[in-house]
Image 1 (cartoon, rainbow, N blue to C red):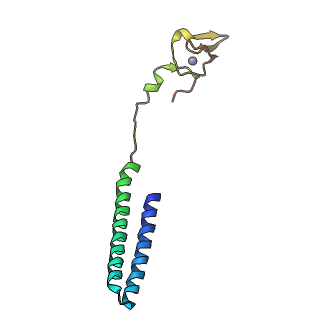
Image 2 (image 1 turned 90 degrees about the vertical axis):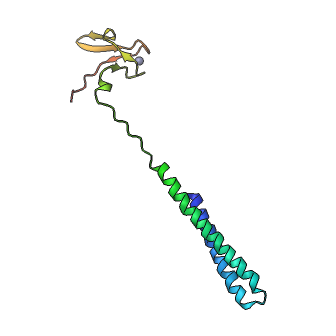
Image 3 (image 1 turned 180 degrees about the vertical axis):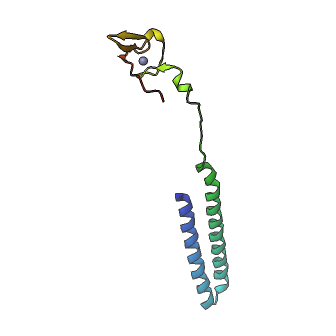
Length: 121
Ligand SMILES: [Zn+2]
């Protein structure tokens, strides 16, 4: 529930309460004719506010429900070996075997680290 909507409902509630008070006041007074107009006017304002408050809710809903679904095939990210530090694409030239362990030297950020062999699922 949005704050602007709550404010609209609160103002509408006050308008309805004052409308009711003016309506009650109009009965006992000689000049009650004008008070009835004020009461009806406040009631109309209250219903307009409620109308806009409900419309506000409807117009806000589609924007909140926008979801972006990006479905990429799993192979895309597996095609290239990327640097763990800068994300640069590494080639076979950057991988060297040092004492049996594949070491990667990134040509972009000069980071050297051991290439961890992840299990193939
Ligand atoms: Zn790098």
